[in-house]
Length: 529
Ligand SMILES: [Zn+2]
Image 1: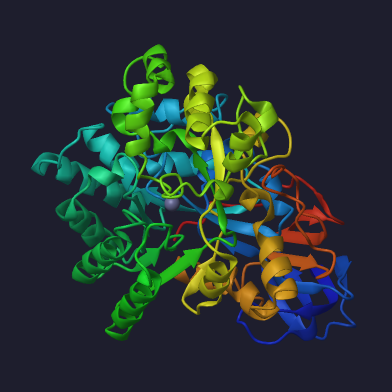
Image 2: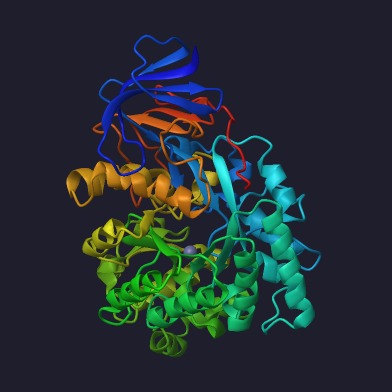
């Protein structure tokens, strides 16, 4: 007698092997049989005729630690068949917290989820808090940014010996409390203040505990190769495993930089270094319009910032110094940048900067500064989408055998305050996009390979050795869907639309989505080694 029996499905088992017909028997929270169970009985039977049965998807690059406490049902994830997310990426995290970092951490948490009190100090406390009931499994990477801030605030310098010792202690405590690894975000504050010596200390500690390190590298434009080489060199020296997060050559990187980076990665592997990569399935990325402003332009009060933005002479200086962030601005590639969120210019949302320039008869640079100035207080929350890569780039990167596929998104809902922070279709639509665009339309990957890159490959990478495969003994995380029916309707302009066509999702042996609707069963767990 099984608890759940899934009959007549096409099993895509997560190894990348071709599908085969079989039934799946689940007892308690484990898969116990994959085979012919036509005479078996079960408390619950799911008919998977004409459907794919595969391991629940594992998102190895998620930021859902920033939203899960306000969305324990993980609604957008469950609709996509995602059963596990590895969170705390890009060096951005909310634990550990000390006296030094508490007020900044509270600000960060409350900017997204004002209703969540920061009631934790250690990483273990936060994991306990998350584990009080969630619909999916969460694996946690402790963020270098949180550790640095907890040890030395926002100090713009190298840590002294006492601070390094504090950082090492906080990292060790976090890893011992259940963090699966360590993440860096060397393009952001405070991660970008970290020098090589600090990185070596952190990676040494991760290596001693056998934990992987995930790197959002310093730069993916002009210094792309040097930035990846820094990650390769620090992890080679310490022996830490290296995950190169959302690895991609952005506009402004040297011709063929991508090829040289991947040659360096393959050479490192040939020499015995454990290096892998991941990437998201989109060639368009979200960004903040204010990021093209040099630091001096953003200092002082909002009135001072606005006055600068409106002053013609200052605008000339700003244009001259726009060779930063997305190089598309300084190259005047206005077709590639679309306004996606603005309070002051709602009617321009959905238009490219070229179209806005044509509509107003102004230079698009003037439109940019007008938009920012008109926005007032909220000028740092004006969002744009940019065509950062070609579709050919994405096809090549996702198909590379060293790449897992991930979201870089947040679990969210299609209504309420949490829906407002979603400005890219990745959070609601990444798994159906992979299967719809790259497996079915473009046919650049087989179904089995795409599923491997979203199940067993990321599972193995982060040490989840009893997940990511449909095999007896594995945890019962399962997705059942019809290939033709499963699709995303989330778009760049309306990204908060749930995926359609997922039939059944099982998390730890309990049904999280039934007949296409979430059950809001909180059967997920924080996965600690
Ligand atoms: Zn990142």
